[in-house]
Length: 321
Ligand code: TMP
Ligand code: ASP
Image 1: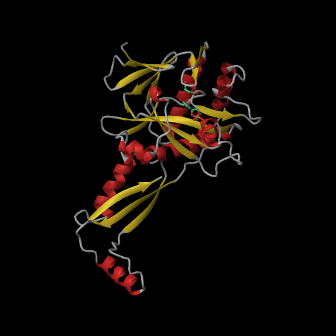
Image 2 (image 1 turned 120 degrees about the vertical axis):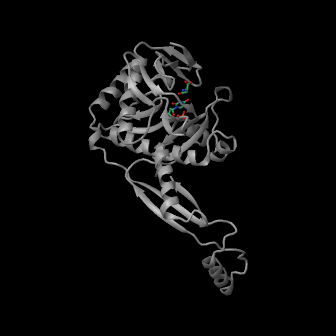
């Protein structure tokens, strides 16, 4: 097989049977601190691979599109070939790790709702924190793609949290990567395993790479325990999470908007002299019973075109997240 890319702990090969697929292979390497700490630990690759396959299949069943297409023998799986965004998306339920290094230890144990952060995936720059605006200005992802990525990340957080809770494990945080197919479909990429998330047991014991980062014990024991617990879960008992989207419909520039003019006059009459222009549109608040994928956004835009707006006189925007 032709090697396409060698990462810190995984290798990417061209699938000999399909141009559109790759074979991803886990090695036994464990790294931390941008590769500063590095060790080969026998059996780690297979454990990470098995954990990843179990979780990606579970998420796929819940409607989150992922790159995994087939499990293979050994520490390998077949995946859709993607143009992976140069981003690491971190979702945190509790403040720890680099969050506390940056901002100090907060007074509370858990965030009131999950925090999503973006990092530029560039080892030579040390994977720096990056704002959503900088991501779009640099052309790494479009605003709509960022919306889908954030929404899918929150869905992943919900589904992983609920699954782990069944076996009394707590999801502290995790890192995701996403990519797009030639047709623009956004898929969850890379891996989810003890290497890429923090999971605590009831006593605050780590079942993840913190065991290695902080020399807290045996990583094989921790990863085996995590996988054993995951195999005891019942994915069917995790309820579907409803998602909210809105379709905003506004009159196009240059198109007369009588309701806006009436409102403007009324505002002036009531003493709000600063008003220059008012445009009145409508908002459709929509709840769906599946994650917000690129397909869903496209379908909803079609709905907007056919049903919710007049495409000649009005512009539409789908908002979510
Ligand atoms: P952090 O607290 O170091 O930013 O890590 C947050 C989560 O992201 C944690 O579960 C570990 C994971 N992570 C990776 O998978 N790869 C990385 O390169 C980094 C920095 C974190
Ligand atoms: N994944 C990064 C590394 O391999 C950092 C980390 O997870 O601590 O160096």
